[in-house]
Length: 229
Image (cartoon, rainbow, N blue to C red):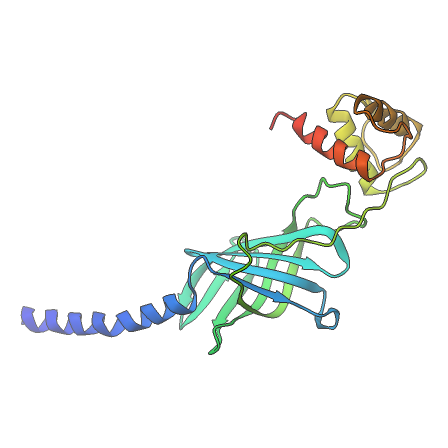
């Protein structure tokens, strides 16, 4: 009886091995899958997807949001030949199916967040968290070694009189450097301009009191170095 049971178990295991192998072939860990959309296809411009063991990572950019990369990650389980991936605490869900030609098809409602939110390059306010909704088809991309998507870069300067969340981010960096003693707000007033001039003087930049692209890059770098992190 024991021998018969062992044989049945062995046959069952042998039957499962090809299915497991096929699943591993379809959803190879470490491979990079990407898409490049036309504007008419929706807000997502470029996307990179990578599975590392049981974690799927998605990096994408949007057509009308320069200087910002969006990212989200979810834990995956293999269910009926598909990856069912979710973020805990109702952070959303994505189903990944393997197409016959090797592409992956994503049906997503995952939440995502911005990266580099302290950057002064951002030209419009965005929510901290939003949903990646829709269906996406990604294909193998062996050339994308980092499996990331780089956003378009656009810079808009800041000057006295401006009112923007970007001003508040600049003032936070100036405060970290001890150049601005006021509480950071969204108004670019004369105190902000004077703090910017002091910063520009320290770093050998033209003392305009205006945050141009060179001043922005130096301020972001110096501000983060100054945190000691």
